[in-house]
Image 1: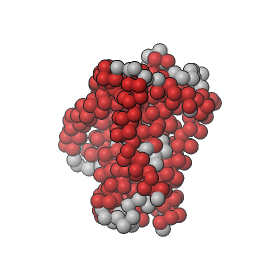
Image 2: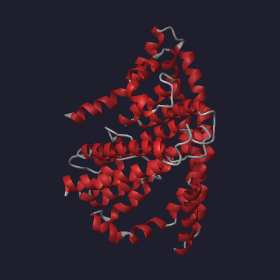
Image 3: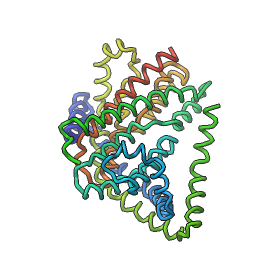
Image 4: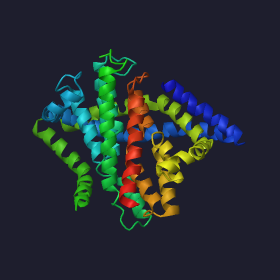
Length: 197
Length: 178
């Protein structure tokens, strides 16, 4: 599926650029994107190191386990394939908490940590496990209480009420999260993909 | 009121985390600095592992964006979206939302500068920016960091949630701001 989407974006882009008579933008966009991707990763290195360092302290101190135990009833239902109190659960909770609070740059490192733990449970396969799919469904559709970035933009554009969009955002993200959870549950229980653990 | 509480929470969250976790660790006799460095080391390798996946994804997205294909697609869909009450200016934003966070932020800022942040278009653009995440970007870096190449149904789930978020944003904005 991803192969087709990737090819679609690339091929349609090049064909349309040719039709629009500006095929040279493809060259620039391609070369620039390659450089940007590496730059982005280097930006991530520091933030990842910071949060994974803090995470390690929390893990050693047993904090992550406390968190996992507290939310066990919910997590067992969402992630039946992960043993309760597995370190993955703690990382997933930290990631979702950071997302809900709008702390984007803390969410990513916790999320990567969670993926590493899930990967071990999945025997380092190159195919996603059910738990990974559920985690990413939650993550990509996650409820956000504080859309900080867009409030900042509205403020800078002299909005008379920059925060009026918070309520509608909560409504829309909440709904999309429900859809994400329900669809994920359906896929893992009834679709042709269900056979894998 | 509610909003004040929320902003205070987000203002204090990181300093408090940075205080409480090491403090609690020290109480539990964890060698905090050594543990921190040990964890931080993993950050480097994880970030490096993502590079090939990110290069591939950003290549396709930026070529698609630069080509003007999206504008043509949007104008082709105009009769349908007009019927559904979606302003045509908003459509490219909706298409880009799952693909690129920085592109969407730029587009939303532009719309607010042109139409004003308190116009219907400005408000709808704001809500859409605050709703759902850049699904492709997240799938790329999360799966990339552990070398997963087969995403199974993740893309369908993520995109369906995005579409619902989009529709919900349009609906709620019509209800409240029109």
